[in-house]
Length: 479
Image (cartoon, rainbow, N blue to C red; front, side):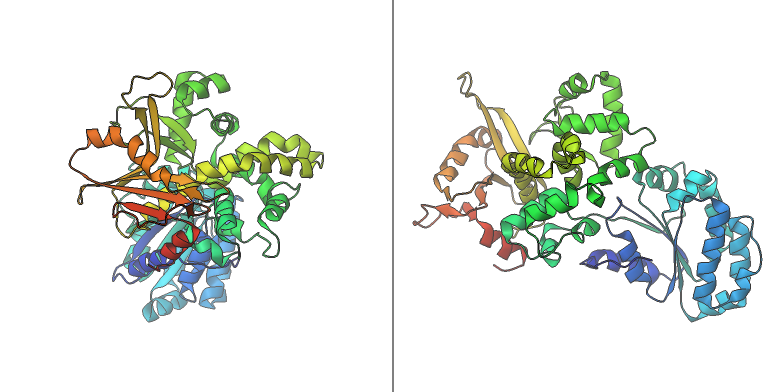
């Protein structure tokens, strides 16, 4: 089993330990996108309490042979290697009846973790039924915790977790492992705040991607080395991810490329892709179900709102489709320097968009010292009737129903200190929403990459200004 840098995962470890401490046998389902750290989490959780097995695409016979070797080593029992097993049920039947297994189970609960379970399913569609029988007739009567883990979210949700799956109702717990939060990036690379942000905008919180960073190289040096160089893992990673998740990735790639080029409405995506509306809607539904695309409607809009916008939600895929895919010909021709300069010229616009998303995450995580129910963007008409200036947009509107509070916030990713006058402009822009939501407590916040100027006077109680030092201190738990 490969070793990875293990960062945080306190809550996830607690969930697994609670499942392990159950008095009865348990079947736990763990899944999440590739490279998110499932192997590291399972390894740290198991310790010496069980066996980890990584399935492959080689089919039942080879996987049974390899699993038998792993469990034999854990039990220190070579007798398990002697029989030849034609199927998984026979293997678990003999295993459960072995004296070494029974003795071990009397000492403490045995963890059996089968990672990349979707490989077994793809090779044999009856596998969910097989493991349902194994759990029902063998493991459920024993002091065992069975973990089935996988990176193919579609297979894990459709073949393992869905109502129609034979394993439905057997699971005693489940967890979708998410990327690390922004606050943990500093444990991978010692960058200043703005470069930590840029790194998050490009790689998100995927541990394996972050581990590829050269701590002695700057942000742009790592971009060039890891994303714009032939042969580097992250140069090809996006295509690999989509090929493993989709049998026919071409149209999915076309839709993701369309969104990355600024086509966010259903009509714009159809026009760019050349696909009809029904097909695009179907593909978008799949991408949204996998968490790769996120639909957006303005704050306060009903669920029937039709002109939704669609955004790529995975940080790495956002960057790759926007900057790597369009420049593959130049990269293949070793014109990396020119590609890098082109990216640098456009990156502030990209970073500005991503800074808004980061601040939304931080607000939901409680950076302001209090929780909010919803955090979203708002756009709409201000009622002025002045053509060309009657549409307003607010970067962030957050709501707390319990406190009756609306927070209006702006995010400024610029290379100079922001004037505090932006607060007054924000108050004017929010007037339309304040009329729609009377009687609320209204708060105004501005988040700036380079701090502020002109705030010599004491701020009013309803105003929050957060520059890089304030953001970092709040993230680290300092007031």
